Image (tube, rainbow, N blue to C red):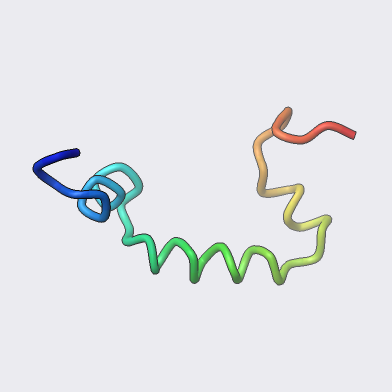
Length: 47
């Protein structure tokens, strides 16, 4: 991480910049809860 910096390490790990991530996450949050839950892996939430 030291040679890449935080943003470079983020891109290497997730394949997109942090600003792209936040844009996509904002779109995810606009979805109805049912659609959000269908996207999340099973077991990530508890009821």
